[in-house]
Length: 424
Image (tube, rainbow, N blue to C red):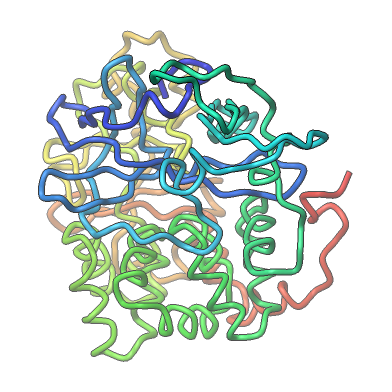
């Protein structure tokens, strides 16, 4: 994100929000924050945009590309579903600014005049400071005398940890998806639903992928259909397709119709293949570049922090269109080869001519032998029309080779000390 190191949030109120093309999306209505106990600064989860149709929608903070003096720039399409606050979330302008508080160690009441946010160590934005004002404001509307303090000096921003859903959710925000899945696995059904409803879509989707299939089905089935569709959109398409395939047909169709059309189409395409084939295991979203792309172009694509490491290991060169199914598949280039070549070199000149693609109908046994023979971490899947339809990664293969109950067996094992994010 292109942004100053610290921003006082009050100056963002009403600021225009535009997309990467400069088209206006609306204006900033509020900022969503979530407290994380006495030792972790509150997380800035996202922003609420007021669209011109008077609908308020949510955009995750990861999608805020730049904070300029006069506007915010976001990337990607906006989900037009109406914003609903979740358990443990606070709206900065609606809930926190102007709230009466007492600074820790003091006795004189004050109000929260403003809050400052800055990128934290993990790259997430956090509330780092509060500007406090005396209760009695100056006459004639002058600016009050402000005291700027650290976030943990304000009780409303650093609540004591308690065994409540909010406290439990705050702890989950700092865990890896596999550890969140372990926590969900161990919860009673009613608490699991309560916590799942409060998690953001991305974290819940990643945790859901780590749960046994029967628990995935049970959890997605009790979520509101609109929320369930949002979570499916955030999942890896292959994992989403596997989950949808396990649902009753009528329920599956309801969720698919509520998903964004492009995401639903990816899932529908994957459902055409048997689960234990290359087509059933693949993701339709590998890194694809045109033949005139340079090494610099390709490396910029694989630097995407949201790209799984296995998919970043290989770049696929295709004729347009570049969304799967693509135009004619020309070949693949290994990431390590890109690192050895000058940035101006053409990617099409670096194709591995000995690498044969997989057919979508290739069975699991053939796919596993292919990966073992060529020491691959990702492989292209090409149809009879020579179009790239997706890529299979080594973790997809392992997932289908392990026993069906391996996820449940793993979650039933006691957690190791180094699995605890608070350990050490």
